[in-house]
Image (cartoon, rainbow, N blue to C red; front, side, top):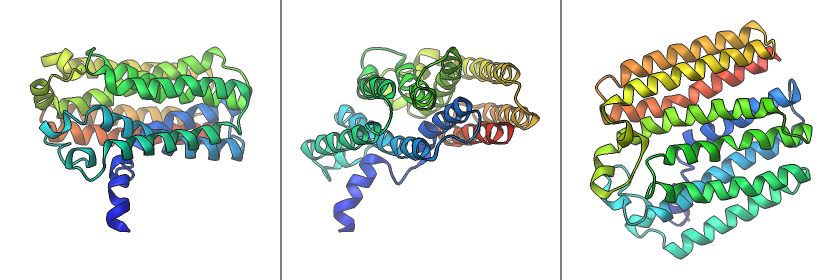
Length: 282
């Protein structure tokens, strides 16, 4: 049974939960802000389950889209669709099953959230193919991940106020930061196979542009705290995130792939810190 299930777990990346956290934290930011404190338990449970399901579905469709390229990349050459542990038909069947589960989850929410969920599905399915046509696939990933924010506001308030789009932009910038770090780890291999990314676009200015994006994110987070008149715990969490970003700049000073990948994985702590700041501030 373990040998049968293991390839599916690998395909969904359930053995690598960092991606789930990166999807989940922005949703939790929005839920706490929209509810002005602890959100209703049923909505919270649906969004946690939804983060796991949609991240898993995103990984499956990503591996389907990259199945002809992953074998040439050192970090991805052991993925189930490359090794033959799973067939394309099995992968697509899993993707459809996950989308059905996500659909059932969203049926428990209001009509506005259900309509927004359709956009989320389109963005999740579109992202893996964008790296063939644009140097900004990270922007599409950011939109897909951050779309949980207007959905969270819609679920709690049955509306999407302008504040939701403020938080959306912060999450979008954050995704550009960490997914560029992810792409920096694969840059050499991506250049060989013709995959596009912001890491390739930024070139030797990668650290500088990431640093500017990190600074912009901190400024927007601080402005958000002032606008909502949040308590000091929130500003302490933003300060801790700023320190983490400074450490990441030191960590990637030589643009070494392993260091860039480690910095990417550590970014989920930034999301956690912001959420904890909101929990204690609201």
